[in-house]
Image 1 (cartoon, rainbow over the protein chains, first blue to last red):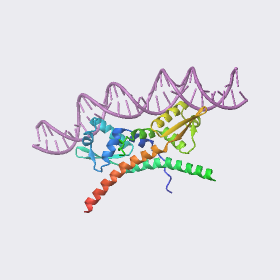
Image 2: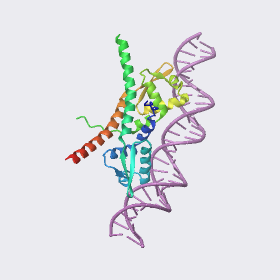
Image 3: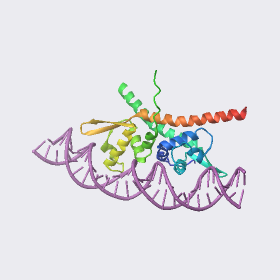
Image 4: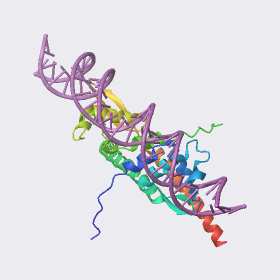
Length: 109
Length: 109
DNA sequence: ATCGTAGGCAACCAAAAGGTTGCCCATTGT
DNA sequence: ACAATGGGCAACCTTTTGGTTGCCTACGAT
């Protein structure tokens, strides 16, 4: 039996998305090409360590993944989580939709 | 000419979504019915003031709106922002899709 | 008139977040 | 062999966040 997995909360993912710098990193990674930390640091306006910290936050939320190649570590987007997050927003919206429909029905009856 | 509005960052919205308690408040408000602070406090596990603070954060992000009726203030969902947030996630994903398509095309050529 | 209920305001607190710097280690190219 | 480049670790600092409590005000019902 597929054992309904305990619905894990999307809050941490949103929290990770809730920072300008991290969003910028994500969109850059959204380009598809895995990027190194130095690359990501260039033009970011913050220090390399700052970037590293942000990347780790993103990784902690499962939004990004890294792999080492030689002396550099390459980071790339983990799209699954992004979609999960989107779905979470849909849930709230849908709930709202249902409520409105019910109301409409009630009024028109 | 419709003057392309300077793309305002969705980060604050995500930041607002990045908290368990606030997500719970949102889903409750997603029920459609406007709820008072006391109502929302009941069973929330945090104090009334705590709830108030969270509601204000949500309001600050434009995710929720309040109106006073008599001695109570009623809060309801502001769905527009929710959709904007979802769209932001789509943007990153789409960007990724485009990149993948390009790659595919390149490989298959 | 006054009591109970709904909230607002302000002060306070501990912990987390965002950022920095300094120093060390590993890989690579010459 | 060694310099240069890419990163990791740790310490440190300031601001923000999430929460509390105490007290005051406003409305509503009796």
